[in-house]
Length: 355
Image (tube, rainbow, N blue to C red; front, side, top):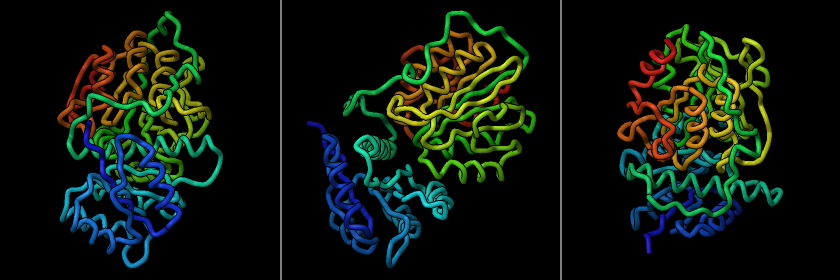
């Protein structure tokens, strides 16, 4: 029997600790080894046993989560998943946590409908699994399916066999998950100000994507913004899918634009890379270049194959530069990838393919 992922939950709310414990223990691959009401108690737990993963709240008494994260990463290389209620005021803080070494950000479960609770459970368990694998820098060959995974069929029909007539204007679509916030920064910072228009799905909770986009906008030569419905895809700009909403690429005449759409989780995610890639296959065809980056699971693999079948050029980040080689590896295994490149070479490859 495979060793379970042992998790330490650090949160000042007793309700959250109990709920998180129930959620994580419901997964056969995960076991909560202990809980702690603040970082000082957590530190004492770690002295007795080092967990595989820590889930860490941001705002806590005696010591905030960001300070504790600094201490953890300097003393113990333990994967940390930051938890937040997604208050607007905390978004910048949580993004800073990603810079400091947190593997993932997840949304604290809220009391609500059964559907919302189930979606939260899948998101939290997947984040913990991704964190454990990021530490080992490998992906387990066996991934248990705790619930049926919907495909992009629930959002959009498969593209027709007729390829889109090629034009001179290219569109770049990018999908990423665990480790993607840093990968996207490296990629976008390398792009020239007149690069082709870019549309991005990064698995990230609602409330963080705007701050994430604004941060990148201040770092890059191109402009970066959280996508809004009907935004035009233009040269020198990247549009990032808003958290908890699917993002589709559409075309009207010579104009490419994006559509923000609600709907069920696809490949266990919303936004889903599969949905974006399918829309690119359908509306851009040969005019598209697809990039799949670091992340756990297989979201984007089927969509990338559809893009390739529609005439698009496709690129996957290589294993050595990925935090988790799940999504790129699945796309490669399906036969949907033309080129495998290290992170620092993806920009050059994209620009070459775009002419």
